[in-house]
Length: 379
Ligand SMILES: C=C(O[C@@H]1C=C(C(=O)O)C=C[C@H]1O)C(=O)O
Image: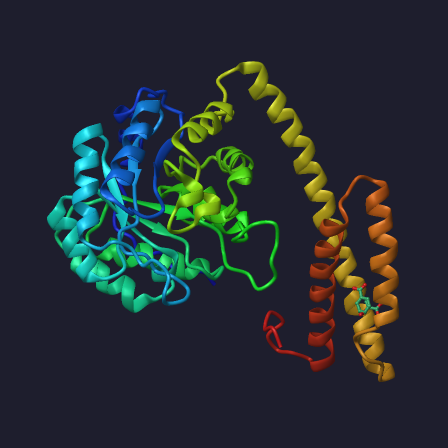
């Protein structure tokens, strides 16, 4: 059972940032950019000025306190960096945002007049830290963005939003930066888009921004992930930029120059969440009716399959035969995957889908074998 959300009102504040740039169309993504870390005053200010000159950036970011995996790496310049950011705002007129991980960071950022705060993935993961930040923000009306936790736990992500909401923060957004995974894939952090989709479903009023820099960890892949984020109706992108990315003191591989950022943004296709065209709507309705019918068929077939599995379970019980039948299962996987491939269904999808069906089938037979009183208990 999903727990009821403990949220006060969430106000949409990100769209108002559009007026800070030349790109003001209502569906255009909100772009937040700036260096991974503020390194020197000139690096910070020059990067920010070049970003502002593109006319495509709505807010400036820079890390001042950097959580690093191992000690001995560059851990940020500390409070002095806030002054540089404030100067960057003065030079560009753009709002500034930085990451806070402790009450002391919040205090320093508020004192300096930072416009927007964000909570990083390594902080969202820890309810003590999130609560400390929430407590330090009581009575303060500042926008806060919450990155997903490093592990794929939607409840932790939602929990952080709830803690801030209970502290009275109303201007919030989520940042999707991907999830650490043991198995290394093509990206630095696995996007696991389904978690962002689940968050959007659970809290529709919470805007989501994508952070393709941290998902990819590689500048060449940023365009691809950015486009996907827009096509999943995310409202904006946070992309790291640096005047000389290869010489950056942190995350060199994923930063881009302001010029490269501008090119990435120009190439993005911005689509709208809906269309007013009558013929589009009519066609969509007709196609969705076909999907409804097919889903109806699929659900009936699944139900029929589970009923047969239940019968098999009963029969196995009477004959003292085990539930799991590996040979039969292997045969099913092999034949269905081949069938799927011939029909244009990917191997990954067929395998995942069949695994779920098998799990449920085993569960049903387990219930039969054990005469489980509660048929829904996962025993
Ligand atoms: C249904 C059976 O039991 C299990 C479930 C299977 C299925 O859902 O297709 C296949 C093999 C068994 O692991 C069976 O033995 O046929």
